[in-house]
Image (cartoon, rainbow, N blue to C red; front, side, top):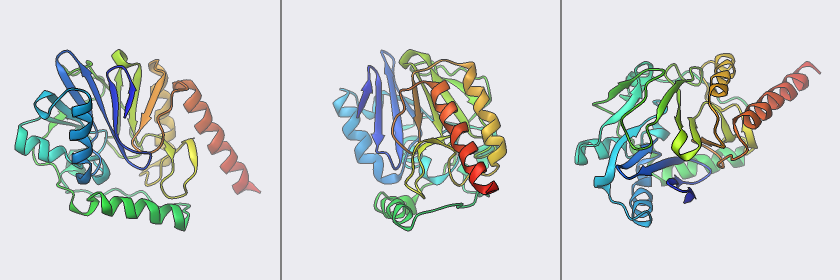
Length: 245
């Protein structure tokens, strides 16, 4: 799906990955599930591109629904993979997240699990050779992506800011669709290791300006960073008020 000039999405509102292109090639941000491989090829064809144009894959954190086709690209095509040092072991399958389910709807959760299985989530290939990222890095990849540390969902969770496409890619630092409840709109993501830290990390997004806020789960948000953060804090405040009653 084309979101804008040089900006594309692979997948859907349940699980998504993104492509950024310029004259030097394509940067992939997150890698969805293994079964998104065909969707990746199809989107590249729509763009007039091919796998050989991919210069790198940036993984926003090490959960399996963001690793998908990344190792296939590295092993079979030599594409370098990038992930924050604090999530490298998780992406290698050596560590697990500690986030809990929290609230859930049977229908929404069943839909997510069905899609996860259908798209090959149970055959995730963990990463074996990665390039380590740090907060503040600017990568020599198409779009000149810059890295923003967003710990909370996981220790090495990041956002990726690409000024050239007016977008910040947030992984699970926030979501616009809770895959367990079906609730839509900007909100904290489920399965978050340290929810309070994740909320505090949102202030880091205020250091950049972008129209597009693009999560790993949920619809693309084009209401700007400030609007997304405001909606999240409002949602959290509403939930807190309900708990106090």
